[in-house]
Amino acid sequence: MTTNAPTPVWHYRTRKQTLLGWLGWFSLVALTVFCWQLMNENTIWAFVSDAPEQAADIGGRMFPPAWSYIDQLWEPLWDTINIATLGTLIGVAVAVPVAFLAANNTTPSRRFVRPLALLLIVTSRSINSLIWALLLVAVIGPGLLAGVIAIGLRSIGFIAKLLYEAIEEIDFNQVEAVRATGASGAQVIDYAIVPQILPAFWGISVFRWDINIRESTILGLVGAGGLGIQLSASLATLAWNQVAMIFVVILGTVIVSEWVSARVRQAVI
View 1 (cartoon, helix red, strand yellow):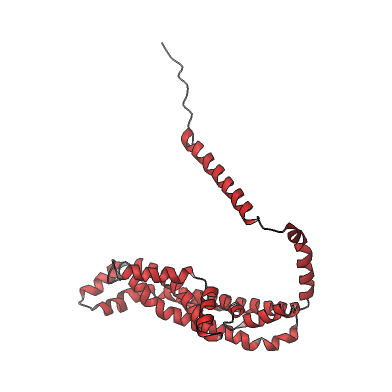
View 2 (cartoon, rainbow, N blue to C red; view 1 turned 180 degrees about the vertical axis):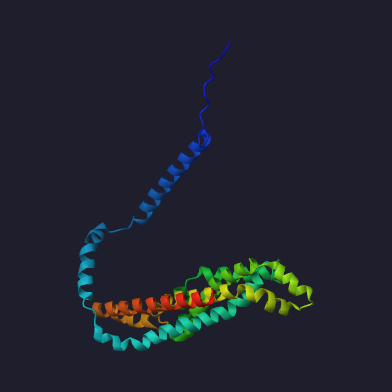
């Protein structure tokens, strides 16, 4: 006697998994709607509906850019480049030892030193350079020094995090080989670790300098020097054609910094 048993049908997910998936999507949609209502609770929609007209009006006032104004931008531009460069150098100088202290395979103490190094990295990365600049302007006063230190403090966490990850990914057989020769700790770092992370170090440093060029252009908005001071003054006087000229200079600077950083990375990596 033969029985015609039903052919089992394969499903990608079980019924429980499917229900949980739909429940997750429903929760996500509900959360999105709630956040949208919360964000727009105090929105004046009359201003929003008028925004395209206002944007077109401001855009019309920006053109043509005030090309004669560029003569007043060379010195602030030079200040901006100096802020980015010096801040990057400060960040690199502090980040390198911090990275060695944070890496699992080079830290002198995983219980005490490594958590402190990681805390420093997280603190640096959690606070934006503009906020650092606000704090430093209040402490040491407005000027280029506040901008340089703000960029440096922000760069520490970025460089140290990527660098300590590169240190943890090295080939440890080379370390053991150098250590077997009786080399000291400093010699092991110099001959076994540094050569392996040097390309990553240069790539990270140049990439951070490229980012700092962008960030340093706005620090002047809070009094930390650079092109941001000119931008703030032009915005305050509604000189939109000057604002357009500043945007052109910033765009050109960013393009040049991108080209320089790309060429340097190609040369060292």
